[in-house]
Length: 348
Image 1 (cartoon, helix red, strand yellow):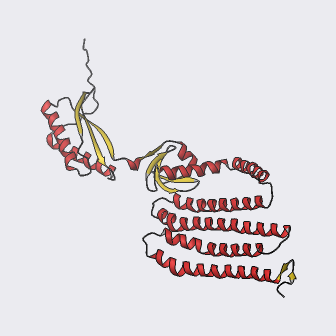
Image 2: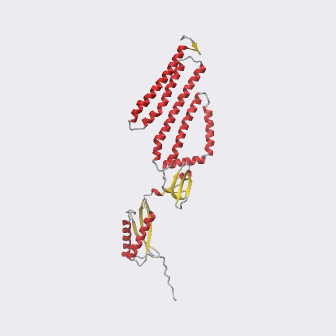
């Protein structure tokens, strides 16, 4: 009975083959149960998330690989002709290739969603949030494309010719979309270099304003006039960027001209008043520079350099200081000069 031949193999050979496949399925179920009920309980107790992620990724692929391995052993235990043996070998190799691609794709998905995405959400900019989905899809596409090419190569197709065709097609696509690609790489440059962030005041391409949005293709700036300007990332990345918000302080240079009737003691008094005003203003740093620097055409000039602290209101601070100077100079009898000319008339 067991020696009877069915499709080129005895009944006992078929029974052994089926037993191997069923054993592989049983082992697959056991491994799957062990990973879910034992290993995952252990990994959940650790401080690291990556071990939980890794177990979740390999759980189903390992079960599939065990079944595929059992199928391979089961078919190899049979006496198959060359055609069927070729089909079996190709099918097993194809499933293994797709399983590896599946694992890599799941790994990319989990890493991006569980690790990189929460990190990107903590940043103030939106560029990284926009780049992550594109990068994730590109990596997954590359993995599946590689698996597809490997499968075709194993099936006997000429991969070299296919790659050459893809190369020419990619070149034509790149030429047609060169501006888009330039803007994309400009956005990546901004993301990596971080010359500015959303909310910073910058000067770029002649526009002075607050950064409203940093996208994949463009950056939006709200100018001081209240208008929104959209600049391509390629233009922003390839031109000088002045980040005003990154300044540690704002340097203010002022000149005060006193009338020529002012004597030396009054000059010293004026310098003392300016020093005192800056010391009393909490928005001004303590490195004020004041000097009687020049005898002007119609005034004795006092040069006043002071620094307004970062994040302080510049216009309000200048206004407060100028009002205080005006008030204190008037109280001290210090007169500001204005352009005058003396004309001498010869009566002869």
